[in-house]
Image (cartoon, rainbow, N blue to C red):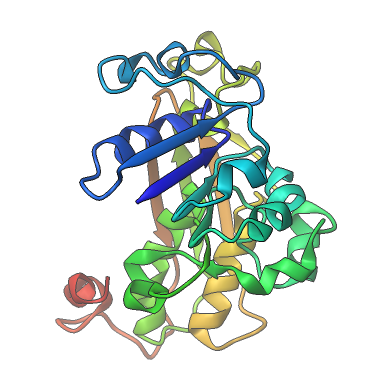
Length: 267
């Protein structure tokens, strides 16, 4: 397979390049970056120094996507919406967006958390790619929106409860590492700020709550279902730690057939 990665100089792009270079069916990887064009991939991602001697290209989205089997968009929020139409015109086999631009299908729900969508006419082209649950349903998709980090952890916790038919209003407490904030440093991602520290942020509504709420309403069959996602920054680099709290309905008790007992068969 020939694969292009647009915006490959960031943390997500670097991890994706590592996985692609180790994939037995990937024969060519084309990495682009506006800020790093012409520079060695290893300059941005030293861990790849022994894997590839390639350089970032400054090609346009259409040039990068043309003739590719798969195109990954590892762009800043909002950029995928602006460039997706150009990528689709190049007709790659599959487009995978790692940003949040196409995760939320409902334009109004998207607006509430992100503001007006720049390309609402493209929303229906994307399938939400929570592969642990969607599985084979993603086969044949031509465009996939990769779930967010908090959203993935939250949905994997919620799914067994939805399968059990529990009518609850869950609260999710989640902690993320610093790499989730991206490669550009800010005051809250600087090591002296995060080391030995734990603090909440976006406490009145994290953006990932939109896609979690979208799934919870779909799985529960209730358009008015609610939940709360409380996000925190932790003193570590990678990963998400999440716990879920909910009060069970009075007439429901957990037994051997409870969500936790059979969850391994549901993912």
